[in-house]
Length: 180
Ligand code: G3D
Ligand code: MG
Image (cartoon, rainbow, N blue to C red; front, side, top):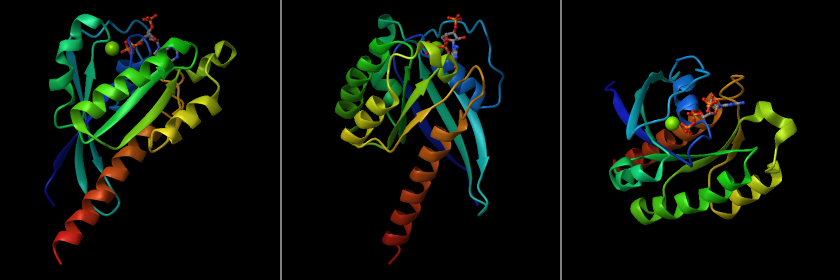
């Protein structure tokens, strides 16, 4: 079976843990002094499903500084799915997701996406209630809301695997549909 590449774009403000999540998901370890992302960074992971399907996931990560925003169209082009990330301890990062969502939908139209609240290890500093984020995800047809911690390695894989499985299932349905 051929190996295909699925591009996912990580969207969200700076400092929420996008690079840390990409690094942990693709098999690296959490890096306490993660350097600020300059421009676009790529992470790769090969996945093998029980049914034998092999896919390479290519995760695109964009520097959060506004001076990199001009790269957004290239960053998004060709993405099969989007992971929106905010920091549960900083409400402004949650609010900023809406700007990202608009840019994504203007560029790509409706696209499979999940919402991730990172830094779950900092529960005592939480500013965004779980219910608020869940409601936002529902209201905007996101596929799900996940709370994770890149630092404590809590459920980091869940949003990625959920999104990838959804994309592969849709593709299979499409391929089966078009072969009749
Ligand atoms: P970004 O790529 O979204 O800009 P980074 O975010 O991955 O560079 O992470 C930004 C800061 O948040 C880093 O700390 C990083 O260590 C920290 N961080 C990332 N994920 C978590 C997490 O799950 N829990 C906690 N407590 N911190 C996290 P510094 O100090 O280098 O700015
Ligand atoms: Mg980064």
